[in-house]
Length: 202
Image (cartoon, rainbow, N blue to C red; front, top):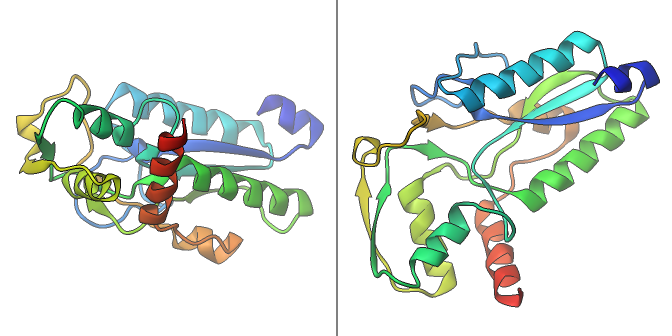
């Protein structure tokens, strides 16, 4: 960010819904107060603050529940588990928008192009897939699209403890992103079809 400021080069930086408290049911707007509940969220917010402090022309794009045919993520985990199990308990009280990495990359390119053209100014924006769902509902759609038989039992977060606190509410208000950049929330179900096809081809 400091180098971008020196060279007057626009910067697009990815952040996360984890900078918020993760409470309530209303989608988080970029203007809402931050209150990260785990180390990941705190480190990402520190990154955001550092970028803003440099004065570089930037867009901080917060996203959530990133999935892809590559790397470790929920889609690949579910498909891997289905190879040895026919029933799973999946968290149903955490709600968010699954976001295919391919759609994030396309959004970043579109945002970068507008920054270079000078048609947008520095700011923080949100981008996530639609519609918002629970992990359990997301898992159900994964198995449906993959044509795999799996019994999903919805469970509360309390029944699936993790070392780090996970937000119950990962919904993001992406209205400003559409208003400023013309980028709508992508339908993650379409992105999931592409991911599953890519995994079949790997």
